[in-house]
Structures are given as structure tokens and as C-alpha cells.
Length: 200
Image (cartoon, rainbow, N blue to C red; front, side, top):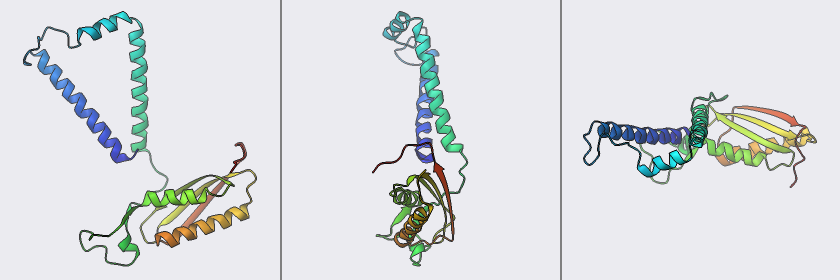
């Protein structure tokens, strides 16, 4: 989930909770037509169900509360987590092809590409080698010469010479397809001796 989606999600939740609170306050003050301010806010059927499952109602409510708190903590972590490398933003390909990119709104036919999509594509290309268990790519800096950070998790039988050639070929394909030539390339490789052999 992106930061924007998380902000929208919590904004909607905030609006819903605020609306519930405002309606409850107006009802408790007796200003809501057709509502008795001395009547319980919960409908009678829900109250009967709650009393019927006593004392398990509190247990269920506690579990649901812990689940919501855990989800909120995870989403908060996604928002405030410090990334090791700054992420390359959306790319205007006119800046890469040396065309004018700062002349106002983009005309029809101009393509914008998300930097994260380019990174995911390079990850998939790197992971095609059976010796690579997992690939993680970060694009930083600015186009057309960004910084490229690659982290590889290799099988215990990986031949480093073969992996080096595979990485070089993948980076060259990235350069040819994106039009960007990384001015800094850092590759970190780790051997995974615990995992099972990967089968293709």
C-alpha cells in the first residue's frame, strides 16, 4: 500500500468516526428528530446479542481491538519507516531523451514512468536466474543518471562469476530500455545457505 493510499484510508476512517461522534453528541443533547435522548444508542437486537454472549463479548471485542491496533501500527510503520535509499520519483521521459521537459504541461503522447515500476522490472529480470533467490532494487537520485542499488540473495551453490555476468547483462538491458545510465552502481550479494534449492 502506497503512502497516498494509506493517507486516503485513514482520512476516510477519520471522517466516519467524526460523523459518528457528531451524530451521537447531537442525539444525546436531544436535538436529533425522532430520537429519545434517554434511549440507548445501540439498537435492542445488538444489546440482546451482547448480553447473550457475556462474558465472551469482551474477549471478542478485545481481539478485534488488538487486530485493529496491529493493522494501524503496520500502516504507521509504512508511512514513517526510513528508507535506506531515497526513491526516484516519476520520470518525464523527455528529460531522458533530451527533449524539452520544462515548457509547461506535458503535451498529448508524453509518457510518464514511475521509478518504482522500473525498479520492479529490473528485480524481475535479475530473479530470472535460478541462482538468485531474491532481488531488491532501489533507484535514487535524478534522471538521466540515477544511482542504482541492488541487493541479491543467492543460493548456496551460486557461482559468483555467472551471477556477475547476469547482473551486468540485466543492468545493460535496463539502460537500453529506460534510457538511463546509472552513474553509481552498488551490488550487495548474500549467500542463503539455509533455504531450500530453488527449482525451475
